[in-house]
Amino acid sequence: MRVSAVIPHWNRRDLLQSLLKNLGEQQQPFDEIIVADNGSTDDSAAVAERAGVRVLRLGSNLGFAAAVNRGIEAATGDWLAILNNDVTLDSAWLATLLDCAGQASFAAGKILSARDPGTIDGTFDEISRGACAYRCGSDRPDSPLWNQPRPIRFAPMTAALFRKKLFQDVGLLDERFGSYLEDVDFGIRCSIRGFSGIYVPDAVSHHLGSATQGAWNSDTVAAIARNQILLAAKHFRGLPRWPIVAGQLLWAVPALRHRRVIAWLRGKISGLQYARQVCGDSLADQEDGFRKILEASERSIFEIQQQTGFDWYWRAYFWLLRR
Image (cartoon, rainbow, N blue to C red; front, side, top):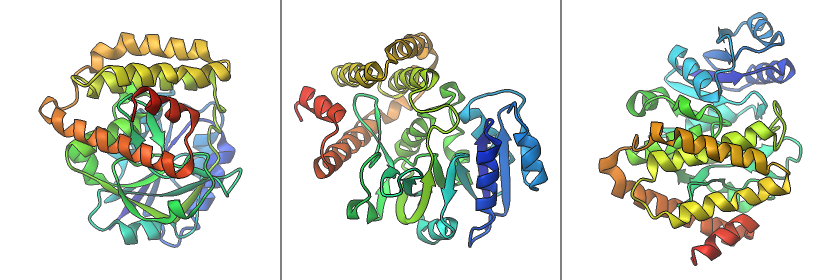
């Protein structure tokens, strides 16, 4: 059984160097490492080549989804680890995921903040009827709640392991998303087709987060705002509109607090312009199945918020929907 690492990358050679060194320290070695370089303007590609890994020089910044796809197409492994360039894996990360994966189609571990290792960066994702995703545990203190293995619907592609056959069955990432929420879109497509994964808390990694562009960068806010619209247009056809309206409008509040409301508005307008291109691309005959998946996912968000204390966003969202 071969395992390939796929690293989408753009600039920040220092992060790439650190990750490549880290991958070489895994108890279970990777059979190949592929860096999909999105036209870095520094010498990242040359640094990776000197390290002896395979480099795909993409020539320009095609976005996260396209870079990952080129890496998937080039990979020869039975399993593919998709890794951000700003993660650090504990030495047993890969071995632990492989040991626990069983018949699951993908596996994700506990991701801690590299700046504060006592804080969760992410675990697994869920999606609300408002077409807004929730990275479960994000910014919460690490606690026994996050130490329980469980089945999951969506794995964050910050650091996760996937069977390569899954991409043959479900398709590659939707490159129209560019960067952000492309992994949620992929998870929705997996769930609709009956594929699921497992959360393995003993597989620990650390994530610097927003290391390339910075937190609440205007382009990041615009991309997320745009892609929330694309998710709704692609998958939420025929579902009640009030949760979508509530979820999308509420997300403007943190953008306003971070002085990024113009970027939020720009993203929403762009999303509406692109919506026709993706509308109905989800499986129409699976609409009822997706409704059940969506309800279960939102119920999981509510239960986690109950256990950890409600964020203002989810408190307002569930109050508006009177859950």
